[in-house]
Image (cartoon, rainbow, N blue to C red):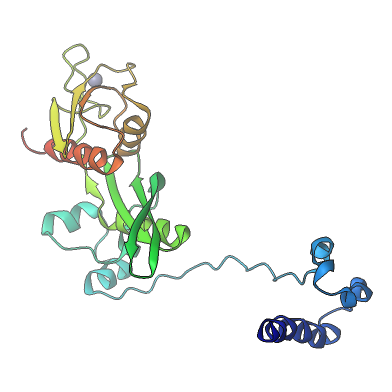
Length: 251
Ligand SMILES: [Zn+2]
């Protein structure tokens, strides 16, 4: 007991000491000697941490490719892909595709037993797309939700791949890029996705999450066919990326 008491007392003493010196004398000081019982009602007096100003990050390129992009030597993502460079900085993608939007597709818990008990981590799946032919999906894991999403964001930027949009619909036969150029099929895990070109004005015939991903990629009109457990977003997003990669396979 005696140990507990000393432990409990010290933070209070520290608070009392620091209180008079704090910025702007706080009005509720006389309530403090009431001891640990008086805790509940004094939430309003608790010193507030000053709100952090949103820092506008200036991108400093660290790789050769990054420097080339920053200096204006390389001006498009297509160029990077044609030359087969590897992107290691998300800043490159952010600069060349400024209209890229990110969307959190899925979040989840990872739990495992360790000798010390259970460990819990978070995972997040984020998609990045500009609704005009570029899509990337990234996975991030961390003990904190926010960091997991940040990591996933970064990974999604790095994984951005081009999608060959077109119009493969015999009902439409236009040359505009509103659908896929032909039927494509992709598989990952148990999930199989098939995307069929549709005529203009059809919209996306797909389940909610797949529809979001197709929209981010820039596909506007298409039918989809799925089988397997599409609730597993990790597999579903991979299968969809496999589909979209196939748009380059022919023609
Ligand atoms: Zn068309």
